[in-house]
Length: 547
Image: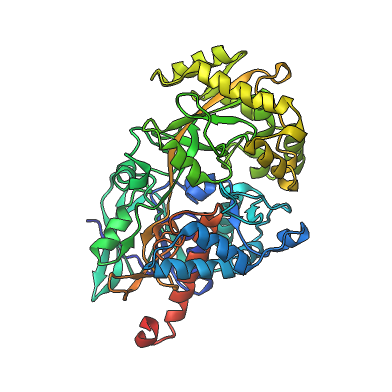
């Protein structure tokens, strides 16, 4: 082992958004920090850099200006209704209550203080399949996407007056958290390029290494029983270095890791047109005016499946069939207006903060995006007729499951309903489209009762969507100071966890299901509490710290 004389007050493991926020706040508190991550410098920020950048916040200025009446009480009722906490989910419930009450000021307000801005119109994600999701719009989209969020925090770190007290080491993998007298004494670190291991000394360690989505073996091992057998093929929507290694290390030290079978995987995912890693997937924001059919071509019912309403419900319906995929059938007009991708890569006008181009995309749709996926994504097929479309869909799956006549019947029935006129609509998807068009954030991005087979809207488009591993709802159990807890409920002195590694707080503050936009916000919030506790503990007695 090579000698390393580095000593710091705190080691932060992981340079995702949670690790960056913790680092910034620790510098603010006068602490010296070593920040370690396996990524390359251009990847700093982790999954947040690739994210769309939505934030769940409550009773914000953006909501008030658009006439949305929200409250902590309403938001908490929505959260706990979706979460379905078990009786022993004490810390997850406390974290949920804490986050909902403080997100506006301690997440949104803090980020605004560092130059982050949000769209004036709040998006309405996760309404719930039965109206049991977000009662009002709460998805605050970051201007600049997740990249803008990361750039703001990373920029504040780089320009900080105490920047000389920070040692950042990329391509560095923590192999062991060292302990001395029952508390951390530092970390053993290996270079990703195969160099010799070194040691970093510190009396406090913050684990912010992400979840398990980058380790598909663990995803399959922990796959929820109620979703049937794990898929043979799972797309990866996380990073390969979010591999669960630090969860196992914390367990080795006696820390409690809970609810790992609770995951936030997506059903509306496709293979990346230009993959950068093994099984690289992308989460779509699917068209609301398209029809979703199962592998045989049968439309989901009795409630038509609209994935943007309830991501977990969509996954449940997909997993009713062991093949674990479904098809979205639409046409060029629908896709151009409504199709989008959740992430910064395919939203350049937002990512690069170009308001004119963004407004044009709202008014004119995204034909370039659709064309890119049609030409390069193997899960997109097009045709001029339903029989031809069915033939090409069968070529994608190769399993012979699709009944072309059944699919044609389902689509013709839907189109016939539209032909009868609005006053005679008797289809729940059309009623939901009407409701979507009532909200200003959705009106321009939702077609007005568009048929699938329409010569003026050709070609037809079919999108095969499947399972993508993304986020971990469970994780390292922590108290409200982000201190890692043992199985007996006592904190391990000097050991903290934040972000997805901690189930975004408490080892699972979302419960069994989540409301979108709560992930990035949970990273910021739990990281700030960790730093606040570390800075504050220096002036408190050991008895006060453990109280």
